[in-house]
Length: 330
Picture 1 (cartoon, helix red, strand yellow):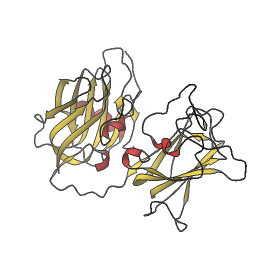
Picture 2 (cartoon, rainbow, N blue to C red):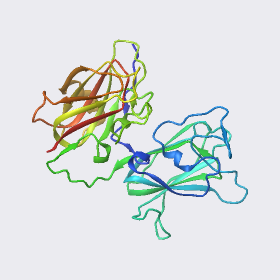
Picture 3 (tube, rainbow, N blue to C red):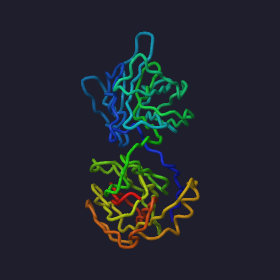
Picture 4 (tube, one colour):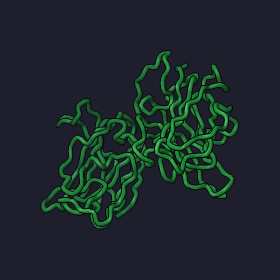
């Protein structure tokens, strides 16, 4: 049996993903590859032997070779304001053309493009960038930011930037039915046991998945096993109906799935949440899933029960594009 190490997601969301409305609002250069690719939510790819009018096609942002003093940078407007906790600066497939070093500045601005009066704060000092690598950094500044400046020294290419943090949500839900598992409403991933082919947070994204990479997908388990993912709802609520979408997953959708749920009050460690989830009540009995389809279910097991955490169990493994859990805020 394949045994995986639990992945602690701790409620962090990629604030830089384009699905939230993030945009590149300024860049010094993008001669070889456009800056907008750096915030695509799916993993970068490599196309062997593919060239365009500027040179080798690269899946990321790449500037020309600098022939004067200075360095290149871009300014990214985050999809939602938030506290930045971790970053991943990914140079996948950039080998020999990656920057020598990178750094990050951040600011809070009500403008689309920060002006000269905006106060930029360095949140990541100049750090060495390696070829074809993920570079993970913890960010200690606890301020709310709206914009990030990625500095590359002196030039080069970066495949993706992920800015993980907690969104600032000022939404009043009232008593109307809402999607309790939408990232736009404030839902977040807490932990999972595997996200080998597709990140867990994808399952909370708005809209229809663009491809298999735009969903949560685990590796093949090769044994009597099941995979799981724990989500925190945008707000505590009573659930009416559930939608599980396997869009694009045709030969790799889970055979079955079940849902568990609970209401937990106060600040609880991720480890405690994982350990306790084994005993949560069933929200949805184990049901058969099908390829490339939206599945609809009514809440029959936990009627009038307030919940704020949901656990998705998939048997034995596979991929789900989206989950939507509708209910009224409590």
